[in-house]
Image (cartoon, rainbow, N blue to C red; front, side):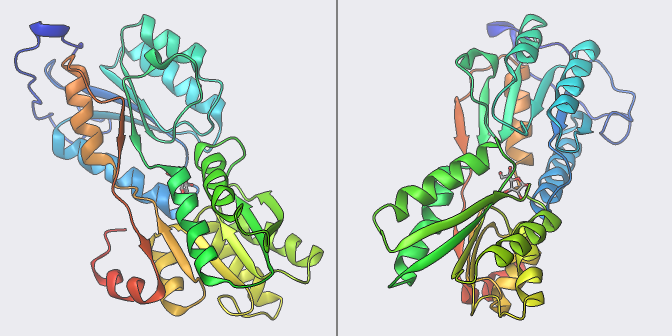
Length: 318
Ligand code: GZL
């Protein structure tokens, strides 16, 4: 279905497809086709995000063309170009890094295909290249992590930071928010920081290197649960007690992270909500109908202590 322009759009029919979504269906011309380029499958958060998007597309009767970029920008650019070729109604994607998108988004604009950013943002001077951003405030997530640390340590504290993928919005912003808060505490110092690529194996390798380089680590600040879980393996292999000898703060609050938090291997988790599917499909329908949408839509999220994780686990959706 091509995008209805302006007031002409009276009723947008989200007709049921002949069978499931993900492009396997033969669809009538009233069905909206969404081209979605996902970052990859690097973490528990990403898996939950993908499942949310796929389920929501099916529920909304939207024909979803889905691609996994395996955390490579060139794969996302290629996927977006293929959606332009297919002349989909809407393109949505989670940009693996913040920069390098203007050219391909200009191609989508020239093809009159609206673009929605989900999860991660881009750094561009031209905000006409996309209709809206749906996701979290990563700087605020970093501040929440810093606030817990400031409230829970009294004296000299050495922090090592497991950063997410270099150039990714959550990595840049979670570092910014955390540093903003600890700046007021000269006794809290980040003694080392390195990219663990948001993966469990990356977190383990970087933590092993940190432990070889430093014998005075007090706290790990990990930009996601998966790298934090890898750090736990490295800390245990070094004969140290995670959560005790070395405290751990992470971001996401996926199932495995929350279980480690409840067990005391992690001390505090800042939630980053991956369940964007339903809101994304509502935006897709509005944008396909030519309706105006807010430029930025942020999702609700909270924080967890071990006790709160224990209580929340039975009801968690991811
Ligand atoms: C955050 C998302 C990040 C998660 C990681 O919205 O982009 O990417 O925090 C994931 O787990 O890999």
